[in-house]
Length: 313
Image 1: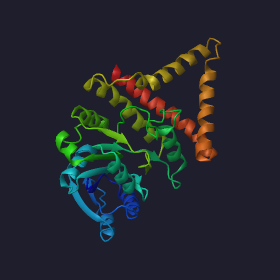
Image 2: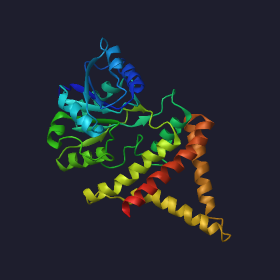
Image 3: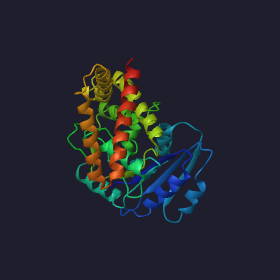
Image 4: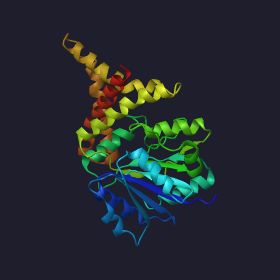
């Protein structure tokens, strides 16, 4: 298949991020490709940044009213001229071999949708590296958001997602959901007979949130979305979705037991925290990131677990 890539980037008040993202795209080894940037009603626009790269990239820039990331992605895909769309968040940096890797894999094993993992760039802050660890580690998410292949049918995430034009036209793209819209799209793709895959070498450097508070809000939103998706798509629920909530409830029960003089259960949580810290330190070769990863892991479980429980109740 003659793949013609269109990169879709929704953006809201992130001109500095767009600058870094476009700079990374100037280094792509796979040519040609077009870039569609959809300014989602931003007061702080990035038009001057787009102008900066007009000579180096095939860019098209659209201003729309604020409608959310999902609708902005749909708008970008409607305007695109390619036959395969790749969606990035504005807070990503793209390795130079990304498109080449995707093209090789799709030519070898074609699917109408794919997703790729994320990684931490050397320039990221300690908190950003810690968040990346917590979101991708085998000991926190089972590696599902990292480079783990053995997770069944892969559910692409919108920060690094590919979809064919045919699949977009069939599904009408993203729904009105504000959180979990990428998972919702995946389920609809499967229902319409399209396949998805993980291209584990098609990773991006994803900055994610820059503070503990922002990360908590993000994971809380993820938690609230999952039961809604389970209700919308019966049969997709898994016991693993309960793990963060059970982890949190178990900790509260352990604290109550400690008031009665039973401290042995606390050893599990202490051991787990030490395991996270040591593993993150080894992976990142940085003690500060290791310590911060303990905090981000607990924040992730607390945010997702509480959001999940609230949505269930």
